[in-house]
Amino acid sequence: MEIASATYIEEKLKAPVPVESCRFHFPLLRRQVNGKPLIYFDNAATSQKPQVVIDAIMRFYHEENSNIHRGVHYLSTKATEAYEEARVKAQKFINARSIEEVIYVRGTTEAINLVAATYGRKNVNEGDEVLISAMEHHSNIVPWQILCEEKKAILRVIPMNDDGELLLDEYDRLLNDRTKMVCLAHISNALGTINPVKRMIATARARGIPVLIDGAQALPHIKVDMQDLDCDFYAFSSHKMFGPTGVGVLYGKKELLSAMPPYQGGGDMIKSVTFEKTAYNDLPYKFEAGTPNIEGAIGLGAAIDYMKRMDLDAVAAYEHELLTYATTQLLEISGLRIIGTAKEKASVISFVLEGIHPHDIGTILDYEGIAIRTGHHCAQPVMQRFGVPATARASFAFYNTKEEVDVLVKAIHKVKEVLG
Amino acid sequence: MSLLRELYQEVILDHNKNPRNFRVMEGATKHVEGYNPLCGDHYTIFVKMDGDVISDVSFQGAGCAISKSSASVMTSLLKGKTKEEAEQMFNHFHKLVKGELNAEENLETLGKLAAFAGVSEFPARVKCASLAWHTLQAALHDDAQTVSTE
Ligand SMILES: Cc1ncc(COP(=O)(O)O)c(C=O)c1O
Image 1 (tube, rainbow over the protein chains, first blue to last red):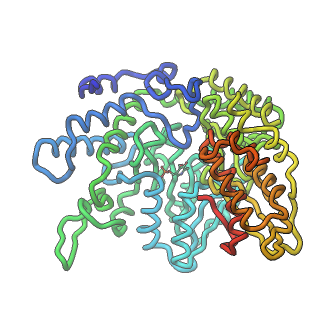
Image 2 (image 1 turned 90 degrees about the vertical axis):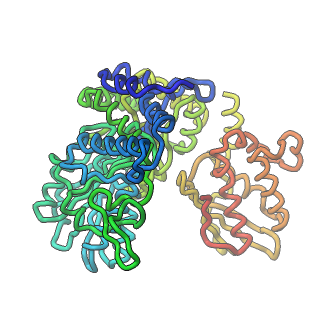
Image 3 (image 1 turned 45 degrees about the horizontal axis):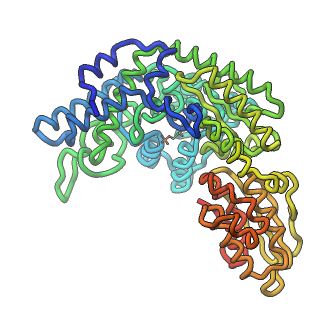
């Protein structure tokens, strides 16, 4: 197989990408499933990868593979450069002040666990409160539950209305002197709601309460700016934003990160070790123990390059159009109910069909080549709030089309025919 | 359509719409909850034992067509059967949905269970089909109060 050269990839990464043609950059979208052209509507679970990302990872293994921050030899220098360049790309992409604030992690889940286990353990004590929202992913619930249990602290929950919008008055009321941390999804994976995080961050910070934002679903859809948001921590995963799995970023404000104890011990996170004492490394390395996911970071860098060539406002507009179109079409199907009808929504549609379990919907759609997610979407409290055991969820990326939505609608009619 | 139709056979659709023995049982010897966290299927199976014989069996709960119809068919087959016979049935059923038993060659042994032959073509659904049976096993074996297929 031929491997794209560095210059070829770089050139590819410079050309602008119009939304209409980006579909062709994703090789997997060309395949068939069950004899039908694949329609990939499970983007909230993970996105597909453009050729440039795949090429960048291949090239790393063909030409630069070696460990980082360790050797003086040529390859190690090259690998370290590529790995650190990707960090700079991530820093610029989210507008963090410096690379010290950009910590590589395995993904959103690890980022949140890191904050809970270090900042949380240090600052949350008996009787204190941690405030999360009613629409969090299990990743932004369980680490706080574990912390609260250990510290005898209290986990409080911001409620939401029937459209899946957080009740801001309740939020303001819930903030108090014992609140030590606010943890919120930027965009809900189960409902699609875009939360007014900037306003919510400002309220908490005015009271000196740090805020962690779970940005797993935000990065693939909207521009995020750390200095504009002014949150204390922000977590995201590469695999949901067109990069590879197994890598992600924890953004943290430098003051907070500096004061936090390390998360894991090992190589790379130390300056010097004797059996008596270890001096920890500087930021961001203090939180990066062991050989990291090098090709993952490089792949994430390529994904960011790819996204930077797109007009993200045009992407958002296109996705919004797709969302509106799909919502209108789906609502014409009798017995179909959409769960999550917030005014501010990303291109995620959770729905239920009267008398038909989502799992059966999923199987029949799959038979038609359509990949959607069915189940509780790692957000069981959301399902309980809306009184459904599960939903079917179609989540769109910029490479999806209205024609694909039409096929979905037809296939849902077929579901009703088979199971009706 | 054919594979789909094989999965969603008339028997399955019928038991999904009109589940048999779908009730809470008063004076059950044992009831056990079965849960499939992946899709949220959730049932309680009730059994009344008369020595070694299952004198009554019923279920309650919610889930997909495959899991519900499987629970329904199971309860309709088990009344009056011994523990051992129930176990044997489970064995056959398990092999059937995993594609290790040919339905057509074993129609006599399988009886109504043969309707679930299509499941073997849909590996993601084997757990749905087996949930009620696993739960029953626990009920017959004095195991835990809750069974999870994960
Ligand atoms: C809102 C949200 N938070 C957290 C996560 C967890 O991300 P990861 O599995 O990449 O750690 C997800 C992904 O499913 C998500 O959608």
